[in-house]
Image 1 (cartoon, rainbow, N blue to C red):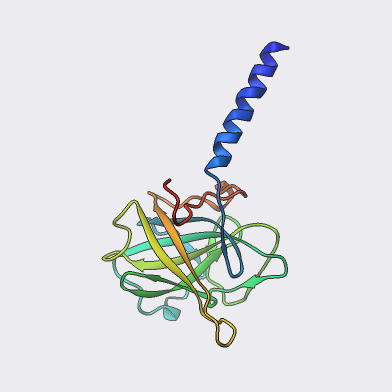
Image 2 (spheres, one colour):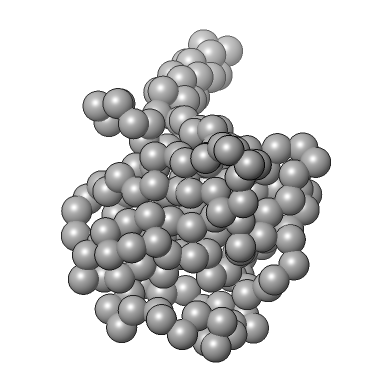
Length: 176
């Protein structure tokens, strides 16, 4: 009995410590759970190179994992990422484990999705953390929606199913 209480206590403490590092960041369409930069380019199903003729030669991938608010939709045309070198369009999304190019809006299924942006590697992906700006392309008249995001540099972006629902964002102003 004493052994099982000790084990339960250890799991409780580990869970508590992990929750201290969990964070989400609000943006116009929901919550950002994770933001990562990687020079490893994921494969994209149905990718249309003609739709993105100006992709950089030296690529750094920016992947944002999001949870949409109820009744929200999102498409690759809704947001751009402002990074050194310019504004970069979203080129694909992942609803499961694979990225895919699609022009149709993705509806909230209750599960997170990932957005993929391809940045110019001559300017981005050099630091362990980088602040970039997510910009809404279609805000209501007279409004702008921009969200400052701190991206973490990783070897390979984390698969969608491995991002916790509680998030693991570095919030601007945090000392993590």
